[in-house]
Length: 241
Image (cartoon, rainbow, N blue to C red; front, top):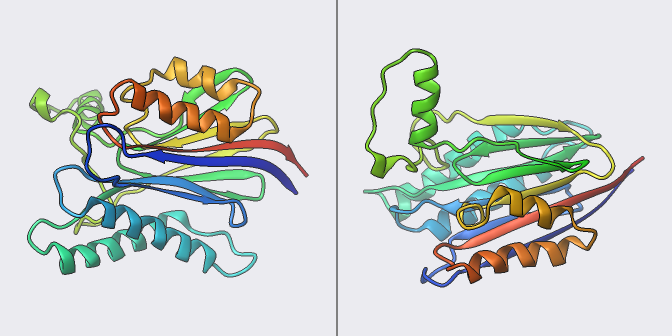
């Protein structure tokens, strides 16, 4: 039996006219995560909402005793969001990031598409468990393989993958065996854009309730300008049975 504590918080920020972030926070289903409507495309809030709704529906719909296939679930979510885009934005489509985790047994399984993030904290060490699917990272990976790849600096943060795309979707899957004391932060890019990883590590590590820490993290991003919506879900693993 896992004992855990968790909290979620979101804020529109100081610049945007609409909050296009959404979160997954369901302790009963052991399901946690975030989605962020893709900038530059219409109906970002609808894309993010459809993403979290589909994931929740598909995970809860998995047969009892059967491990959910998060890659398949993410691809089905992509298909649903793409279908919604054909109806509400047939010319441009719609898109969302999606980073979510599901606890199965004593393991946190994380599915990831886009540039929202999942961080892990364990025994004082804080690390980013997901990798942003950006043009800059794609260039770095391809150059490491010896390929020639050029891009404009103005496009370095553009996404190379998102939920809602018409082409077959590549999904990152991360498996993190749990230990008592572990802490996990799922957040949209409005958080790390304004808060350094070292600062996030300090705020996650403090001995307090996750709701307090999660609100402080989001509120800090707003105080520093709030240039984007900021959303996070914080998960503390207290004990494993």
